[in-house]
Length: 126
Image (cartoon, rainbow, N blue to C red; front, top):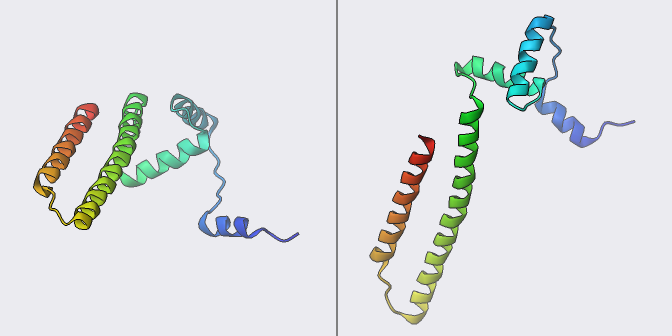
């Protein structure tokens, strides 16, 4: 039976390795994984990457805060794209009717929104 292209492509980007750990070490990894609500395999991958980059594990409270900030950033990103779309529509309409729109005032409002977003994110991270 031939190997599907999808599997060939996956195998070309991934390496599968088997490791042997003392039971005590595996139990520690398993306990860490359970505390982080991830699988032991994900824990081993994450801890390995952290060790390579010299970083420390993130506790659940920090992870939760980061998830909340990320969700807010996604919402704000959508809002900013909507604003940009509206600015383009205003510009097109202004060109069509040959009247000038006060772009400085419009950009000032967008700058104010940007400052508000930055302050909100800074407060959420604290």
